[in-house]
Image (cartoon, rainbow over the protein chains, first blue to last red):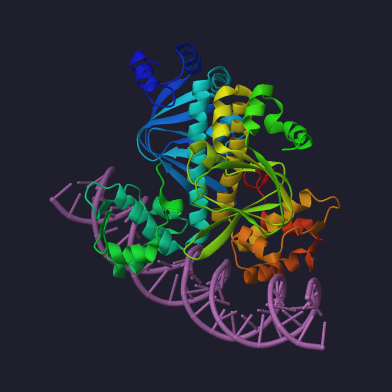
Length: 232
Length: 232
DNA sequence: CGAGCCATTGACAGAGGTCAAGGCGTGTGG
DNA sequence: CCACACGCCTTGACCTCTGTCAATGGCTCG
């Protein structure tokens, strides 16, 4: 790794509090690699050789079974993925692919486990990261079991609206197919779900969505902080 | 806590490797409490004051939103629950109730966080526990998104069959309502799902289920180790 | 023996998936 | 520059999955 990169990595919160020596050991044999869009980084079932840390770009975590596939999460920097597989020294449970050009730091799993044992500050940061991820998954499972498709879309739009610069105007960053899989439905049904939201003030113009009646939309979606406060 | 209880708790794997002093500190102000069946232990949204460790009995974790409720997990000893809320010092994301008479160790959240910082062996055990729980949830989310109701039931039966003493003969431990909620469906649909499995050799006699044609059932269920290997 | 809870069943309705067709934008090669 | 192909999104028709509501019957427990 270039020394510029090392400095950059050093500063992200996962590593900033760890000891110098342990940090150097951790990055031994680590790669900081750039990938184009639509490259598969991880295949579920493979043994967890590296902890991946997304520094730039977008990565999709997805799962497959029996010729079906579903998007589990869309990851944006800075975050780790498949940390639990590394800690447990087991197979990855999710596959990963880039959705756009991305930079990923790949740290050998062995190094991570050693650093956890050697450096309490790093262990602490990893625990925080893992606990945070855990809560994201619990929220996703609750959403999947407690809401129907239209409600999931409505709440997704309301969450996106929280993070948008201009309130009421959302720019969808993922294509329809990916969004549908993330929300747990087919692209066809997603189209219809948008249709059903029209009378709640949701206007669709390609990847730009306008919310013109937040009261009605909130009334339909009934957002719940124990499901929707997802700081990912 | 009685000294008998302390000895018993000391031996469970979460605590066995930690230092004597840290163990004593951890259990300060801790309660080991027995509960009858059908008692609510935790309400989602409350702040996480205690780490709960199930020593005997059965506990159901469930989530609610908008007048709906769903069973998230059925916990059997020995295991922790709502660990992530304790580590993050945030609100519980799931409620908990006993399904049968149970004994639960309740450790003040503050003590857990202190012990994590003070005792690397304990921190290590907590990380393992958290990583294990994380993987259970990921599997549950994959199952929910990648399988329909009948397939979820079929795979549930196959998993139960793995842990039963007499192969092909399963004793269901939860009532139909709870099983249905765990599998993400209504009790009525669960009944019909059992009906659909009849021609795959699934015979229902109350809480006892016989699997008389494992080949056909496997062919329908298509179990997948990345979803079904759930050691909970 | 009756009240009440639970599981099942039937009839029906709505949610959501599948398949096929068509429109629209984009890129490419002639 | 245009024609065409291709991929993506949408729409319609249709069907399956799943939920709702009501009725029934078995079971437990007073």
